[in-house]
Image 1: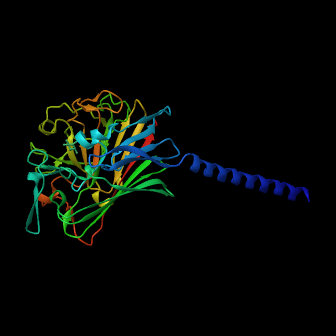
Image 2: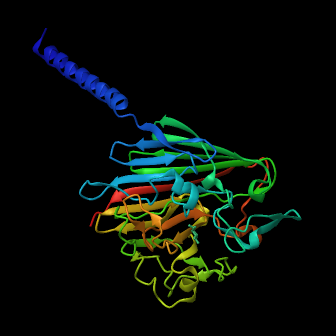
Amino acid sequence: MSLNSFISFKHSLYALSGIFILMLYSCLQKNLFPKVESSYFGTTDDGIEIQEYSLKNNHGMVVKVISFGGIITSLEIPDDKGAIGDVVLGFNELKDYLERSPYFGALVGRYGNRIANASFELEGVTYDLEANDGVNHLHGGLKGFDKVVWEIEPKETQQGPSLILSYTSPDMEEGYPGNLSVEVVYLLTDQNELKVSYSATTDKKTVVNLTLHSYFNLSADFSKDILDHRVQILADQFLPVNNTLIPTGDFSSVKGTPFDFLSEKSIGKEIENVDEQLNRGMGYDHCFVLNDSNKGMRLAAKVVHSESGRVMEVFTDQPAIQFYTGNFLDGTLPSKQGGFYQHRTGFCLETQHYPDSPNQKNFPSTILNSGEHYQTQTIYKFSILKE
Ligand code: BGC
């Protein structure tokens, strides 16, 4: 063997052993650290066992989901020092989710947000819904998608571990027409993204507006409020509300108001301003009309928490986002970390259509016809602040 061919033989050997070690490592990693695990979480009052599934990526991010309500019970991400922290509010016990959750981490449907006077008309028929928020209907009613048990199928994909959640809502459930088959996919990527994809079909004309109701606190310390988080919302307009939080039908420019989040500002900066809209929402609890609604998937909002260095970006194809600053949290709900959730210790950014669209002719339609395919996606992307 010439010296040259010996050298190239040696290099091939190195390359082969490199490939072998990589394959061995990835097999070991798959077997030793499975990316989807499940464990028992609790039992519902009617005896259904609820499992908790964990999705893990290769950067220390872990997302936990239970089959009750499709609820995200925890979302762990590193801070700028590499310390892992849970950044979503929730409970340790199933019974708290069953009895008194303000939609912590839940899938919300059939209609996320409010419908005025708990009724709407479709093709000349009036549909009466449950009035579970004063005279209005909120988040799908008394037993919305946040309180049903979803079927969950874990699936490893090329993009990362995922969960496929399905639920079929029978005709007239909570007053809504049509058998509605819903599928929601939670996918965790190695880019620290949680991709949430919603799809639904119906056998009869109906209305749909699905969303996810996670309360975030990027400090991962739930004894702290969220007023120091800096928020940007790419919306030139928001929908002013009446005193029962139903949109008046007007579109207001955010310019010169506390609702201007076009450039990053802290939540606390203007939340206590004397302002009729802030007064009605007891803080921010408003639908922001996202810019570029014709562009499909785009950045909708960004949240920066300087102290921990955690950053969250929300991308969506939806026309709007409800920004809610945990104004109704009042120190009565038990925290996962001990103690109780105090006022404004979490904020929600719920991507969706406008509230009360079924009754407001000038709002984009939320009607789903039989034969049509409802399909939307929202991505929550986490990163570390580079300053
Ligand atoms: C609504 C709030 C409501 C909260 C329930 C939010 O989506 O905008 O008004 O109180 O959900 O937890």
